Image (tube, rainbow, N blue to C red):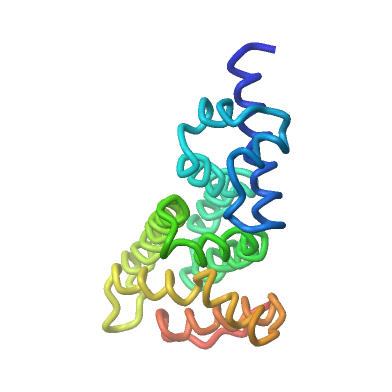
Length: 202
């Protein structure tokens, strides 16, 4: 195995171990604890990621890669019907949210007092907003957005309405099923942004 392939495998192993630790114990886990979980030294972690902040940013990006989230977004964006496109796009995201919730919710909890957690979360949220903006722009280009909506405001609305926090309030705090939360969020988005009432599948 080449050195580059070995380094990539080591990096992936570190990220997967870090994900499991944070999901189980919270994002306060130390680099030393992560290093111990993969049989490396703390210095080895620094070699790969530069800092704890670098590791956390790489960690949340790794979750996107494992689920191929951006390719799924692209396939949804290619759908011809605006209502179907919006629904499929949001469904892709809302299937992804439960998978990242244990780690994402902890980064959210820590970000006010933890610069590394804040940087990791901001990095992903900027990308997510950009994806929603691309979706909104495609709807606007075809005249599908309801009257009064601009592309940035539609992206803002989707970003907030489909957020990890909103999903967590419905599912974790109020006891909704993930399917019911997804269906309601998607139906509301169609009603508000497209001025359409859709009978959606779960």
